[in-house]
Each structure stands twice: as structure tokens, then as C-alpha cells.
Amino acid sequence: MLAVVMGLTLVACGNRANPVSDFEYGAVLEGIVIKKCDSNTLDVKIPAKIDGKPVVGIGKEAFKDKGMMEISFPDSVTSIGESAFAGCTGLTSIALPGGVTSIGKAAFDGCAGLTSIVIPDVCNA
Image (tube, one colour):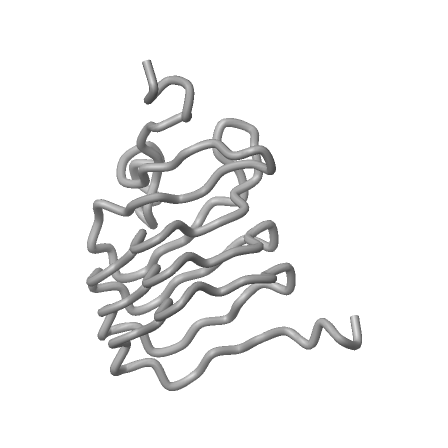
């Protein structure tokens, strides 16, 4: 019953051929938080909406130790959890959406290939 209340289910993790497969997620007041990705897809695209609600967060350790090289976020994402991408050694660059207001401790720890993080200029927006 808790899984139904929290909206826990599976949805796509960069696999465009099968859009309902690899994300575990939960509902929060503002929308949806990605809790886990069960895929090792190289190009991950976080959907803008799941079940008609905006994806607003990436949870703690959601992508930890995944083999992705690229990830794209919808503009609706406002938070990235602790160790969310820790150990993603193939990840080389990230462009954060302008609405991100919090990034958890060690979110990109061990991302040895990460050479670029693009943070939008929200001060001049």
C-alpha cells in the first residue's frame, strides 16, 4: 500500500524505445522525484513529466555508479540529492537547468571524467 501512496513505479531511463521501464520514482508535494535508475544507458534523458506531474528532483544516490556518458534534465528539476551521480566515471559534462536551487553533498563525487558543469546565469535572468 505504501508503494501506491508514494507513487513508486517504473518509468523510462533514456530508453526511448521502451518509455516505461527503468526509473523508480516517488511523488512529493511539488511533483516527482527520481529515486533510482535501473539502466546503464549511455544517454539518459530525464522526462519533464511523469504521471502528469513535473519531475522536480533527483534523489539520493539515484544514479550512483551508473555508466552514463550524457544526461539531460528538464527545466522543472530544482534539486539534486546527496551522491546522486557519485561514481559515474563516464560522465563528462552536465548542464544544470536554471531552476536548480540545491545540490546535495558529494552529488558528483568520483566522477573522474567530469570536466564541465554548466550552471545557468540565474542572477541575470
